[in-house]
Length: 81
Image (cartoon, rainbow, N blue to C red; front, side, top):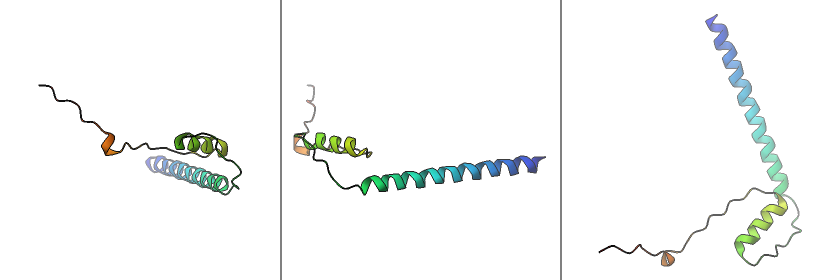
């Protein structure tokens, strides 16, 4: 009986792994097809950030934006006396 439970659990994990693998392959193929599209869109926003957002929305491509503040713009907090 113990071996039967172990066998069933093993089959369940194998099925779960194969399902996740197939999902990843399908997602990668979908993204590849989106990236292979001919560029036919010109963003109208004035800032680079807004242009990236417009492109991501138009082509429905997931995109992340990381905003880095130059070190000369960072102000240290005032020390209290």
